[in-house]
Image (tube, rainbow, N blue to C red; front, side, top):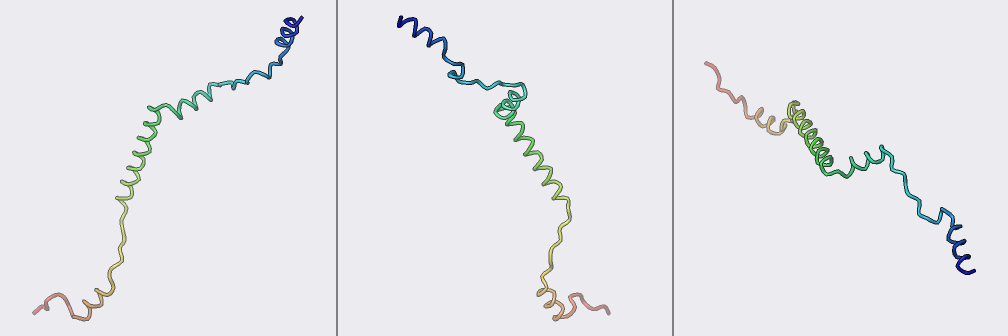
Length: 87
């Protein structure tokens, strides 16, 4: 009798008592692989480094503007012409 009662209890245990497993879709599997695959991580880092070098090359081609030292210009103007006079 006790055996039969244990058997009935064991079979009537609801399915929710077992842990639910997440369904792995193809999209989710690809997302995980892209995120953790070492070769892909390294490739992504190489691309970012190359884009950084492109930005540096573009900046190097741009002209730069610097401000002249005004105090030096005024001193030169007060001391007279810097070139020798023509005869």
